[in-house]
Length: 412
Image (cartoon, rainbow, N blue to C red; front, side, top):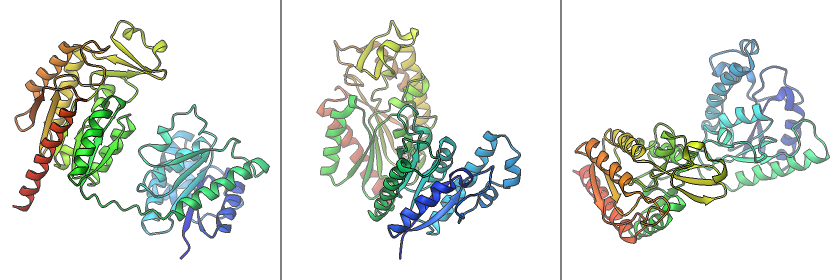
């Protein structure tokens, strides 16, 4: 049976372009499902399979009512409807991949639907917004959405735009033909987090876990990575979590550039799966270029990491706040939870003599954690730096014991 690719776009302004893209995809042997995300005008050039009226109804409204609203509230409502309509269409097998063409509104609307789809379902947005200066998080979120710069605006089918549309058609057809199953078995998977600052530790832990028959999925705690991990934990894909790099807590509290959101470090505890938590890289706030640091950080200990980011050492008071927040989150855990603290330093540049070495601030973190953590959450202190091989060996050994105990409890 021929596979189907969905095209989502505002047909009142992008009808001609959708018609051309549809024809190119069909020439490559695929069926096309057209989804109209427009609000104001009337569809042009191509007939939608899922209409704007259907999407508005899915949002609990009508297209007539949305036309009377201001732009912002109308788009918000359509986003709600698109999420439901796209998810439903995929779940009943109406398409196997999805592509969008459009400007900022079109990209936002399409992204809302794409983010309802599982990982590995092909998702491609063609837009002039993907030009490097825009923050892509708004459009990509925590999902595997590919954004392609259209170079020209999406208005008309011409000698240049045809090149873009032809490549886009080939790309989405190729993605679909790759035939990657979205099913994740979740057998013997362990989630972990890694920065450049904790790479030696995580690489060693990964090796040790793989030797024991586990598959390790590593997330970059850049704000989005942590949220993606939490979402996949919620979906039940992981046997356990080794949260080696909890830096996103710090950036969330102190306006760092890798803030992990309000629910970071909560899902594994809520799900009741074994988790080992390490205060990896909580000892600095990540900011932008050194020359552009806010005035309040000018007298702090800093480490010039690269031209894009600077590490600001957290103060004693900030470390106390971080510790209290982590304790509060971990105290809610219903499953086995242990915190392993590397007494020799929490990040790569926290050794004695290094730029962000501050044993008093680290001590305040540890003492506060001991004071606020509940007895069911065990704290283990390791006389090692976070990147020492012995530390990786320690956390892996502890996690293995927890997994075994948890497995034995399930079978009793």
